Length: 157
Image (cartoon, rainbow, N blue to C red):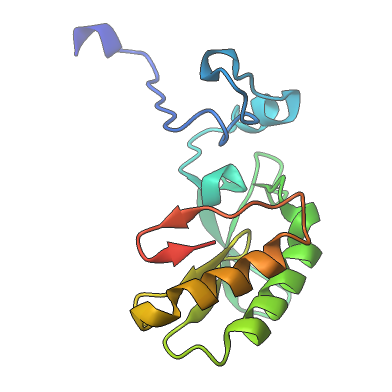
């Protein structure tokens, strides 16, 4: 602990693909100038959605509607968000709508809008319907080459 006295300790987990673009060799991952400028903010607490939504610590602010809101502000009082995936929001919403439509007749399937990604939950889907659900999801995603399908625990998205 002596080595940290008077120093600011910062830990970034999952750097490759979160704070930098994904590269074949994670040792070659480099942050963009924009991200470097952003992380100079004091006390950045949140980097979620696989780095697609990074926000400085929120502070209560009284807005013009008279209500208090929590937003992240820089030293000049401007709202601060780094959302490199924001440009994909229209396509994500389109995919979400198509997935909901394609999967609505599969009992137990649930499509979740996670803002910067979509999850298709199938924990409650009958095992005999797994293949049909997978085909329907792939039939939607294959029309969007800039997106790819990954899998989690009983989740595809």
